[in-house]
Amino acid sequence: MDSCRRTMAAISKNERLLNLVAFFLKSHRPASVSEVLGSVEGYRGVKGASGTLERRFERDKAALRELGVPLRFLPESEPGGPGYVIPRESYFLPRLQLSSAEAAILALAGRFVLAGAAGPVSDALSSALRKLQFDSAIPGEIRETTEEHFLFQRVGATGNERERENLRELTAAALNRRAVSFSYYAIGQDRVARRVVEPYGIGFSDGHWYLVGNDRKRKDVRVFRTDRIHAAVKRVRPDGIRPEYEIPAGFRVQDHVGVPPWLFGRATRLAVRIRLDSDVAFMVRMRPAPGDRWEDHSDGSATLTRQATHLDSLLNWVLGFGHHAEVLAPAEFRKTVAETLRGIAALHEGRGASGGDGHG
Picture 1: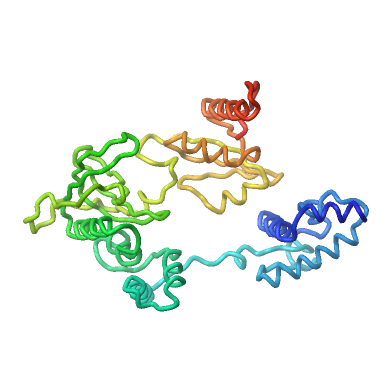
Picture 2: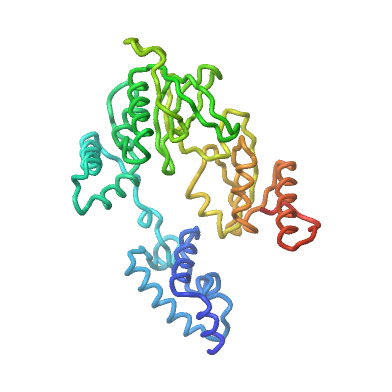
């Protein structure tokens, strides 16, 4: 009994509840009480006190249900039963779909926030609008590009006054298909250079505004973070009244803004195979990247094949999972991961580290 108390005291109730939720979400079938007690951290490993652990599990079940977690017990008469399960369709919110009228109402609410007329609900309303993602049925040629982002992401809500003015100019230029010029600071080159761009659309991601357009000098679609634009955005032909270019068919801002860093640019994509253990595989699957393919294994782990154009960025992502991830292929990238881990170990141990098996 004393051993049981010491083991359970080492893990807080909140951590134990999170462990339970994670266990049920990644489980492919209903789990029995004995499976829970033998698998979930906070119950696992305690000997000779099954009655105490079962009572603790009963209290934890009640706590989860009070929190709104749809934990269900399936009897033997139902498929997969008997056992406990959290139905994913009940646990996760459905994808939000808004009609044009509903989207317009939310856009109007955003205007009240900008005007300071939302009163005591201003902060809550502003936060809610930032979290919403829109797939609205806006008519017109541009649809999910500039018009939508300008309407719902609320130009002027963030950034300094210079950036707000530039965003207004860029939005108008994209809507009217007018080329612009500006001075832009490129971090990779650590210098400011003049750019002439045909704006295709404006997007918002991770707290920053981005312009997507054709760079006339480079003759390619590029993405520019608007807070790195120096001085004012200017029209190339201030007196022009006709559209100066065409936006490519099928262009979408979301294909360029908010994509993972390992897919930046238009370089040839390389397939990287990564084995993820059962503790993290289900979480990675919940946030898929373009082109992901999965191979499930009987122990709950999975092999992810992920496309990448920038392996340095993917390396940082892999290392973030520690021993829960292992790069399988290509061999050169696996070797890079192993060498990076040896270097990290050497820094922490104060001496060179030998060996390495490509775990990341």
